[in-house]
Image (cartoon, rainbow, N blue to C red; front, top):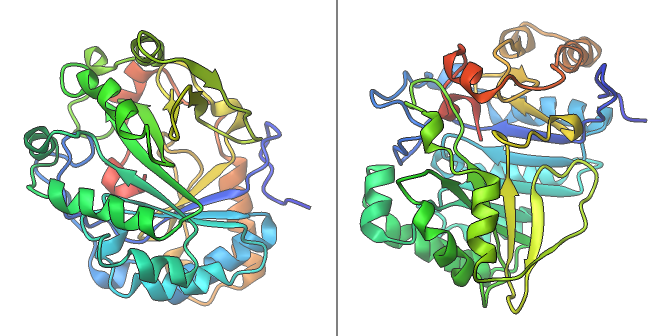
Length: 327
């Protein structure tokens, strides 16, 4: 029986674990221009602490774990943690979100350790535009990482594209064409407000506009949605690849959300846009028992809001930067 049911009846089966707040890119919609105060190593959860927390979550009903950051591949010996997590009883899927800068030489080891799925962040197929968005010249490394991961036979590979009006919205059809002959799902994500990312409503290129743009050239066929899915998924007629839309700003999916988050410094966030957190690191190091840990996890689930506020309110709210929370 799942023990992670909130007061609105949502059953949580999906845990996103940030393993670091460090990143080797500086994406303008994620990282504040002045950067962040990265946590000292001793303030970040150890692999043993992550494994213990994850094990308790799995006992309570989690069946899917995703590793995030920052950039998870900058965390030393990450393959060791993946091996530990993939062995947890009840885990059906172990995924990771990465910017792929370091992926080329690590894809095989990640797959062998038990990683089953990859989400790769890529906001432009244009090398110079990529540099303008990420403030780094790593486009060639990212592309090499994508092709290396395709060769390793992961169960699922997705491209995450944050679509910003006036920045990269004109590349939507290019991404659709890119997956024509690849077993890849390209996920177009509405631009979301986070601390100091200078979000403006005018930058939101809506789900309706994205879908309309694609349907001017391609035929989209809806895919069956599984319980807890947050994306709106479509087949593309004549394509091997598929298309999805993450519509956080214009068509909220809060009512079916099954996600919980663990930050790199040990806090549970019940919602990406909900500032209050339940902190675990210090009590864990003070000798908390697993039963006491379960109590805190239930508290985090119980405080999860029914939905996030409208996007203008989110922009004015007080929350961590995206890179500090984990994607």
